[in-house]
Structures are given as C-alpha cells and as structure tokens.
Image 1 (cartoon, helix red, strand yellow):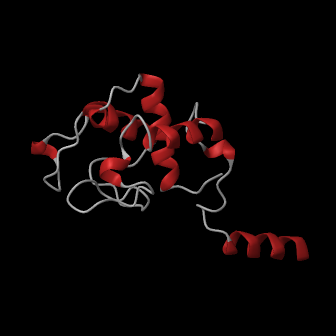
Image 2: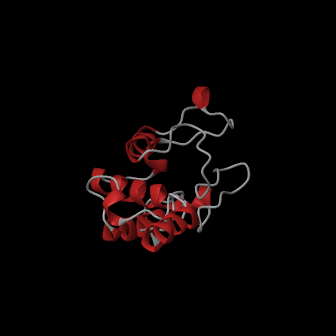
Image 3: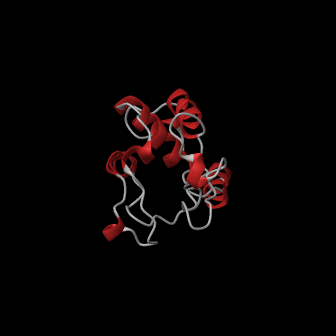
Length: 127
C-alpha cells in the first residue's frame, strides 16, 4: 500500500513534460543530434539571427521557440522539419514575417533534422 501511495504521489508531483525519457524522443533523434542541432541553430543555420541565441525570439523577426505556442504547425518533430525545409511564406504567416526555406541557409537534410530536433527539444522536456 505504501508503494502504491508513493507511486501515486510521484506521478502527481511530476508533470508529463518532466517525466519524459529518452524513449519519448522522436524516432531517429538522440541527445547528440539535439546538440548538433543547437550548433547548427547558432551557426551555419543562421536561425539565431531571427530567433535569438537562446531561441526566445526577436520582436518583428522570429517568434519564441521555447514555449508551447506554435504559430504555424502543431509543434511535432515532423512539422518542424517541414517548416524549416519549406519556410513560411507571407500569405501563410500569422505574424506577417516571412521565413525563407531553410531560414535562408544551405543546410542539408540531416542538418535540418538536427535543427528541428533542437527546436523540438526547446518546448519539450529535455530527456
């Protein structure tokens, strides 16, 4: 009985986000992929130019990527990959700000997936 009460208390204390484990990462995503994505985000991907070095957003340029609010997708890993790949054209932008495909960079498909993994990890609990 004590074990059941302890388990219930532990579940009540931990939110789904903090209870996330490495098993709940999107398929193909690892901690190393996320770390590589962070390097791309702040380097050759030029993402930080609009979203800021901590991805908290820059007014009039790029939105905050660290919260749970997604402006142009459902925030799933697959949707983030697609959004980075295709960008956000003016006629689909909810903010009026255009995001060019690949953010205007020349990232490869594996690099795009790494950036997407990093961006996904920002609004989901880090395993």
